Length: 152
Ligand code: B12
Image (cartoon, rainbow, N blue to C red; front, top):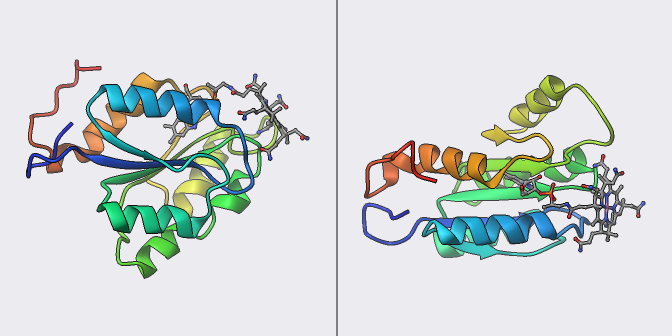
C-alpha cells in the first residue's frame, strides 16, 4: 500500500514492555510486507521511547503494538502521551494480542485501551486479514490507490 507521494506506507511493529512472545509479530510482519507495506519490526521488549523514536525517524503512518503476556494495560498506558510530546499525537495506534490476564470482559478491556488513546484494540487470536483490512481502511485517506475492501 502506497502513500500519495508513491512511497510505501510505513508501519512500526513491536512487542511492548518485558514481553518476549515474538511469533505473532513475525506473522504480522510477513503478512503486512506481502501487502506492500514497509514494516519496521522492532522485535520484543520494546519501550515507549523506542516505538516513538522509530515512528518519528521513519515518518511512520501507524504503530502496531503487540502484548501477549497479560500486562498490556500497564505497559500500554502512556504511549499516546509520549506520541503527543514527540509531535506525532495523531498517529494511529493499534494494539492486540492477549492484553489482559485470563478471561475478562472484552468490552471493558476495549474501553480501557480506547480511553488510553488507542484507535483500535484487538481481542486474542485476531487474524492477519482483519488487521490488514483495518489498517488499509484507516490509512486509505493517505493512500495513492483507492481502498479496495475485497483486497486481502
Ligand atoms: C510460545 C509461548 C511462550 C514462549 C514464547 C516464545 C517466543 N519467543 O515467542 C515462552 C515459553 C518464552 C513464553 C513465556 C511466557 N508466557 Co507464554 N505462551 C506461549 C504460547 C504457548 C503461544 C504464543 C504464540 O506464539 N501464539 C501464536 C501467535 C501467532 O499468536 P499471537 O501471539 O496471539 O498473535 C496473533 C494474534 O493475537 C494477532 N496479534 C498479536 N499481536 C497483535 C497486535 C495487533 C495490533 C494486531 C492487529 C494483531 C495482533 O496476530 C497474530 C497472528 O494472528 C501461549 C499460549 C497460546 N496457545 O497462545 C502462551 C501464553 C501467551 N503465555 C503466557 C504466559 C503467562 C507466559 C509467561 C508470563 C509465563 C511465566 N510465568 O513465565 C512467560 C512470559 C515471558 C515474557 N517475559 O514474555 C499466557 C498469557 C496469559 C494472558 N495474557 O492472559 C499464555 C496465553 C499461556 C496461558 N494460557 O496462560 N510463552
